[in-house]
Length: 638
Image 1 (tube, rainbow, N blue to C red):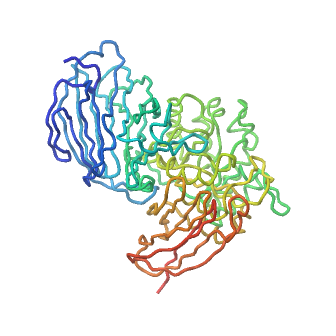
Image 2 (cartoon, one colour):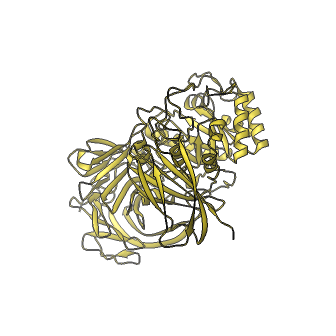
Image 3 (cartoon, rainbow, N blue to C red):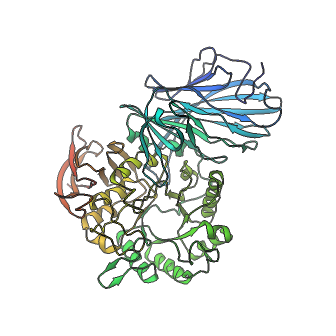
């Protein structure tokens, strides 16, 4: 019979192979997760195209969905493609990231590979099932043409969803049928109180970043497509559906990174951790010292970073001249000599220095020569802002700049509406973070406590995000700082907690040393955030309401932080993560009367003895409206 898509075939087969379930007539393959809890079934749809469905814990959550690509080459449409063999496989390994949410990540999946051919042309579909999600992609084995995507996700019920929304509060919660028009991933879905999903992509090497569209009144979301040239041997991005019993299980997953290849070069020079930042200190006053974006202020910041064991200082815009003027040279501009001096001073103190550059300088001056010069100065990284171009162009530029930074031993942080994370940090661990969120200091009318406890369950599922939490100067009224001197809608305990909860290889904090020293217990909590993390686990949380996060630092200590929305609440923290032994819990909490609008700077500190290794052990933490709590667990010596 005549078929018009790559994935259409003239012959169906019954398949029963290790790692795959038996299929029914009309089905191509059915792949179970290693734990057997989820099954992705690939079948022939009514129109002859390739479709899929997904079942999790016996619940059908996606049905009659379409996967695949169509050729735009003249003469391909209407040509029959023959299905070849279906092969199954399984993989069981361990990924040990240079930095991440944990030091060891199980890399375990079952997969099926389905080949299709027409004369000398062929494609292969790869379908994988992990314990926390499923993924599929198409590999071009020899089709010389332009491709367009025809995939969609047809949910089995009118579930509730949230979406990334640029530098604004997330869209959601909204019912799937209420969505009308385009929705930007990552898309997080609550199918039931015990089943959450996320729709995203991984390993986006070619083509447009994923964009979804709904016609309204429907539970189906189509992939917005554009024509893409896919060369022989290239693969499309993985389409990914993550799942978990709680939204926290999505947050804790490394599935997006696992679908990317291992690095091909040495990245032992990458240093994740706390980074200071000079942009928000500009205009701050302490005693008779006025902070500016200048050498004298940078020295104070470097000294403080060295004292606390922080990784780096980030120098932001205008150091090489007005950032949006074409004649501002990113190598020889205004403060280039002072920048070289502070980089040298930082090296003497064991503190790296990052340099800002945006797309104006990155386009009007040869970017590789610029990055090569930064390497020769001894810079530790680059913050790249305001990238221009279409989504496809921005993604390719992001890939190229990341690779160039890796070549020149520079870390990188993309800002100002960057392309969404898609697991690039596995292949390029120098890609420490990106501003795939609303940075909280960019306007209290937009960023509220609910924004934080929503974005950590949505944006952060895609990968590391730079939200610039950690402002400790929370006095009422306008500040003296030059850029956006509005009050921060948070409490000081919540600010410390947010730096920890937010997953990022570069945790960029915005305040001056003196305000951090004003709160010694909270400063100790910041200094205890020693990356790379050995373990991370979202202990509790509800999207838009609150979150409780545990991480084990590289020195072995366990830390916990919690944050809430506009409502005060008390949470009971399950301490079963602690190994056997006696511990002192060093707790910083909001004091009585604290409030994110009117009384931000009051906190209390207490110490409580707890036992690890017990099946039933908990700790109560109280949070004010817009507040938070921070805990350091110190093991008692015998």
